[in-house]
Image (cartoon, rainbow, N blue to C red):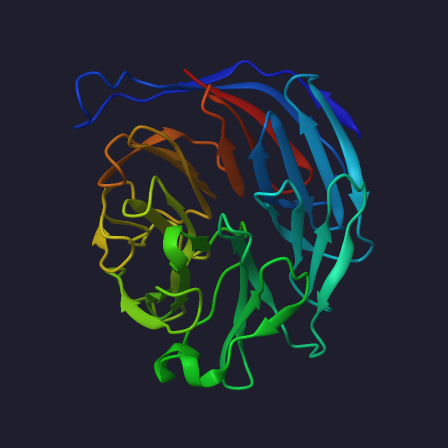
Length: 340
């Protein structure tokens, strides 16, 4: 796996307007791995004391928190993996973004992935994938053939079919997605799914009924002439969630964080740090962590306000309930973290 280095980096943040019982959290880097410096990691999923990581050269890695071990689990030759997702039955999917766009599937207890969807059009670009608890799945990509690209997986069916053009608002074809961490799509209970989009400003594409109908919803991002949008979303429950993004080339001048308290029907601009962020994750209580090019931020109040937690940024980040976590970045960087 290349070289590894121990670090002793600790950052802290003062509390904002969070409840009195919420303690100040420190972020500590406990260990850093450097694998192949030609590989860029963006796909990340944590569950059951295991992190699954996807890279630009098709490598799918597993880090076991109990064993403190990192290994290559599978290699999908030539596939740029941007998203890894665990399905409720214990299986996994991996998303290859382009040329060809692919969805790979690993059934339990297999140790390999198989291709279950491959885009026939060389222009197809996939951005993210997610699943409901009943194992229905949904994936999306940039518009193609003049309307949004949304793929739907039926229950217990490993094949994917495209949602019809007639089911989308016409204006939705003007907006594309972002695959910076594969987390700009989120499935919520009772058939709700939310997709973050962008162009000169951000939008949310939302379905209340497992993809049968869709609405395009405004969000309070500022307009950017060269494009801005939502790169990542995380939810505490069916109503309360956060979206982050901005403009990756204009990192310090964006409105980049918003929150919802009604399941994505309406959105509000957050206070505090407003810089480009490629990933946001829910930790516990009302605490969210976001990360991107210029640093890592924390919100104690459900995304209403944000403070800089650390000047080190990553492509994707995730935590377990005990505060241990992992962040991944470019040039082979995988970092173990702890919130305490």
